Image 1 (tube, helix red, strand yellow):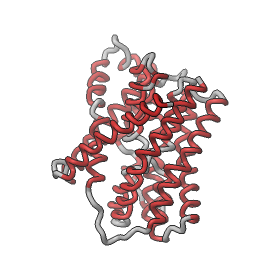
Image 2 (tube, rainbow, N blue to C red):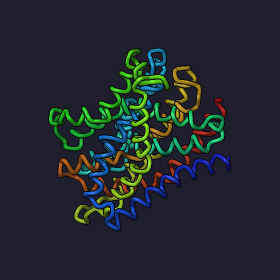
Image 3 (cartoon, rainbow, N blue to C red):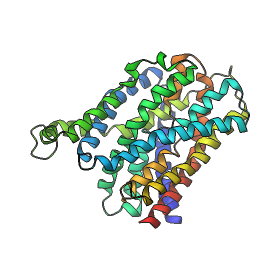
Image 4 (tube, rainbow, N blue to C red):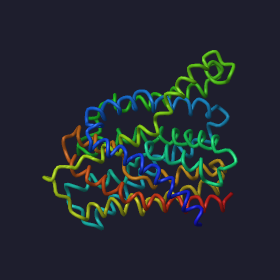
Length: 343
């Protein structure tokens, strides 16, 4: 147990240290708001799409398509259960009406990429159960997370964006749904599933293999840049003109970080014992981690776009991310012990 805790704590601590560097850079105005916007655009338009194309095109093919369906469907399932938990927490803690949508959205929509990607990469490199081939485990974890994002990203914009505004879903821009990461995921799936394209891009003898090599090089910046942006975003103190009652913090932290992870464990266990997911340990771990991550930082961006609740959401996220250091470490400890027992 001590060894597993050490691995889990170090994995979370590495992420925290890089995020703290981003926080310092944000405080020092090196990563000011303009620099963060520019770096975020590079992440959204170049680095993350490159990562998704490389991972999906290499790992997914026609034969393995059915294998990935459960993790794709687990994304909307976790979002739906998180939404219901958020509604319940808002009632139990008597969250004020003007904060209910913020806490419910935070419970439903987690940070499905910027936290799991570097976290799983660290776990694959250090956990004993993946010691046999850590590089292959890391590559496979990226594929599982990429498939999960296929189900999560559309929900983030189709559901989360209009929900936070209190308006109809018809108010969303379809350009946001057809975001570069979503389009890149479809491109990666097409290359992996269409044999002529696969022969053209995948393999050492493929004519356009150099393109995949260039995309792989671009994708290497995803992990550090995402954490630097996250830390810099959380460095900005929210305005003091929007007080938040304690029960809003309690509803978000209790629901998202304490209750929802239990559902993640139950979902992974059901899929495992029903032989619906690969018995490599990584697929179950991804599902458990995705159910335990703090809320998506894109929720603040959505509030900025609506010009409604931005300061309140920023404060809620700061509290959630601070609490996630302990809760996420605990989840990983029990996840690794559970998967080790299953294996």
